[in-house]
Image (cartoon, rainbow, N blue to C red; front, side, top):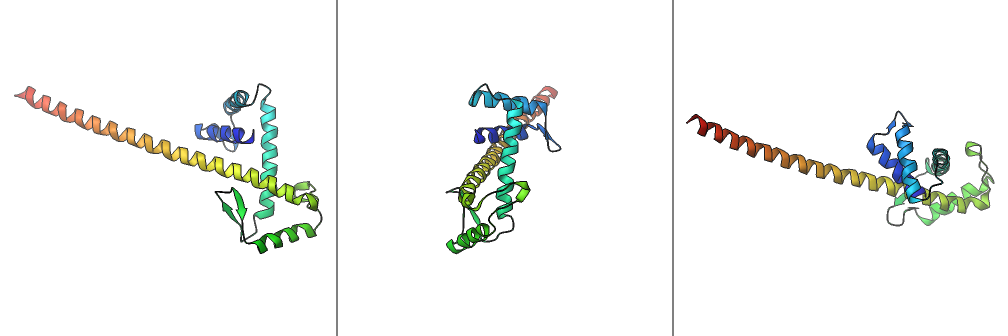
Length: 172
């Protein structure tokens, strides 16, 4: 569900249906249509808005955990963060010492931290993969459009040459 939604959101951004940080009505209509086809007819605009809020919360929690940390890197193959074992152990100890986290008004008990982290890694992995695919697709499309434009220019140049020859023959 999340991957389908993220792909639909990226598609709408590429279509220009997001202005000044807000989604257009057309974007929501298109997303509802896409998700209804992929997931089922129960999808509504409010459902999408709530799902987007949930994804933002997941991202915020993951960001709060990692944004000031060094030593972590993203592994594109495993789609998880990687670091040295001692860095992970220090990170886990640091996040279990406090008992609870009140970031953004939510409480997360220490024993649930590993489950939470795993869920966050999966969400971040999906978003990074989806974004990378969109960029790759955009680059591919841009390359194809460039090739088409180049062929059109060559064709027009040939037509101009033929026209010039016809004009010179007509003058004689």
